[in-house]
Image (cartoon, rainbow, N blue to C red; front, top):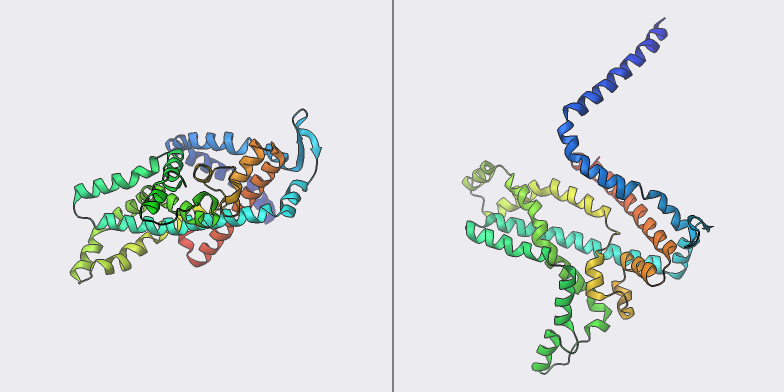
Length: 322
């Protein structure tokens, strides 16, 4: 008799749970309405194109279309592994992104702390404006500025070296120096804008804690080390997890405009997944190979996020994403 009672009550409990979910959605309808554009964006541009992933497993024929082309299984992935391109592209992309993430976050935190320590409001506003400007400069202009500085014949750098009696540097044929150039260009363009989030987090810090530390005799470095930096830890972890999700997604605009897509001499240190996919699509017209690389990129990034979130959850559960 007890089992019968439980079976009869189960649908009622489920109905109440459903009613509760709908009621909560209705209560939060304003927030859901605000999220609707983002939901539509991801539905149209992220989920609806997913059947196109089948392109990575076929030998694409323009006349027959994606789903009528010859199925080749993992041949496109096997070709990438056999030629060695996949490992080189993966290493370059991850190495650059790790440099961007680590150095970028360190500089952004440093800039945010320095802005917070400024007491002159006018100087603080002017400094923020100057540091934000590089973010809004087009990657095309960044490449143009770099070329005018590094060009062998007309660049400012070589003109100065010739003027002081030194030999000019052949920058665009020396792959060893380009990792430094690309990282410096990225940090110059992104540090000021990226510091906004950390600066906003510092603004949320209770000023009474700072004042209490000052009364107790803590100097500026002690306040930064024991109060400000621990306060920024959750923000840093969240931004780190978000960044790791795109660790295999290179900054195509920056690489393409700084290096170009056809400078084969610089491929060993500057070729990333995005530039490779661009060449396969625009030069070789191999859509299947480009799709295979993109699919590999997405799956690899997904597992990196899951793994990183699992590690964070073990170390600091309150700062994990899920």
